[in-house]
Amino acid sequence: MSKRGIAVYPASLDPIHFGHIDVAIRASKFFDQIIVAIYSTPKNKNVLFSVDERVELAQEVFADYPKIKVAKYSVLTVNYAQSVGAIALIRGLRVFGDFEFEFRMGIANKQLAPNLETIAILSDEKYIHISSSTVREIAQLGGDVSTMVPPNVQEALNMKFNH
Image (cartoon, rainbow, N blue to C red; front, top):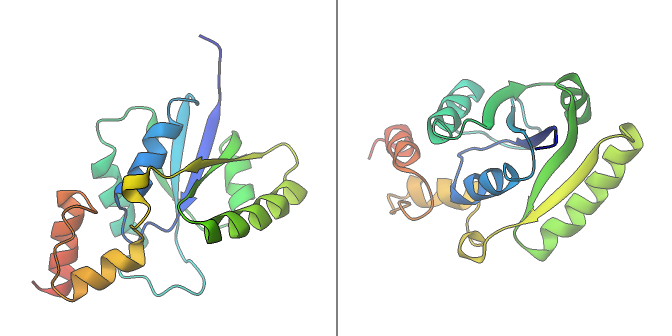
């Protein structure tokens, strides 16, 4: 088997949901290692979980996937990716609006790091309705998010919202 390298899947994962998980697992088929990189201080986002909580939840989710590693970072994404020897960034696309944002981000990243490729993976249609903000809102209002997140995440959401 030829060496296929490392890819970084950057995300805030607040919280991680089945859409994120699907993209990471599918990406792992194309690379030797996927680093699910959780940005510690996402700008313009009010995070529910601390970065350490988000890392712990993701590590629990990917415990049975040896090719998927979880890490936190707090620098420019391309700089982090280069620091771990990545050859690609993985991005998930759910809706048309994601494409425009990811296209612009991919061009900017290519300017900053010409040797780093951006690879977009289309979300499985059964997950296109899921976003972290939707999960948080439903959970905050006491709704059932069991079809959107793994049990450990549902439990963490229940604890945050005291359900």
